[in-house]
Image (cartoon, rainbow, N blue to C red; front, side, top):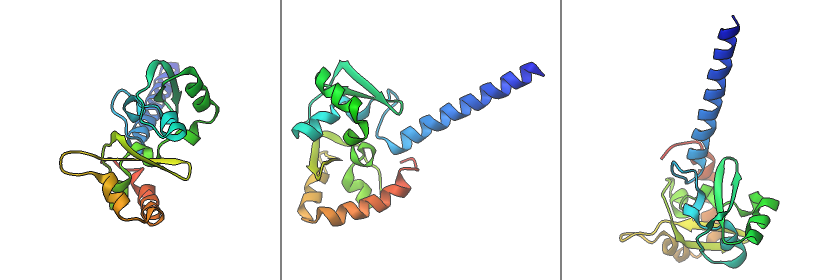
Length: 157
C-alpha cells in the first residue's frame, strides 16, 4: 500500500511538471532550453529601447523560464518587478498574434509603446514590424491581438 501511494504521488508530480512545462511552451516563445527572448535582455528592450544580448553571468528565472541581462543592475531591476519586463504575447510576433497565429521573432525587431515591448517576425519574405507600423493604428492592432492571445496562449503552434 505504501509503495502504491509513493507511486501515485510520483505520477501526479510528473503530470504537474509536464503540464506546467507544456503551458510554458504554449504561452512563451521558448525552445527546449527554456531561455526567453533568445537570450536578449528584457530590461534592455524596455528601459533602453535597445536589443542587447544578455550574459549568462546575469541570469534570473521567472515561472521556470530563464532571462539573461547585460549587468547585475539589469538583473536586479527584473528581479524587483519581473512582470513589468515580460514581453507581450509571450515573445511571439505581435503581428502574427494580431493575424491569429504564433510566429517566432527576430530579437532585433521590436517596438516599445506605453511601457510595453512587442517583438516581430523578420525574414527574407516578411518584415512584420513594418506591416504593424504601416497600419498606423497601434491600439486597434493591439486590441485585436490581445483578444486573439486569450486563445492562442493556450494552444501550440
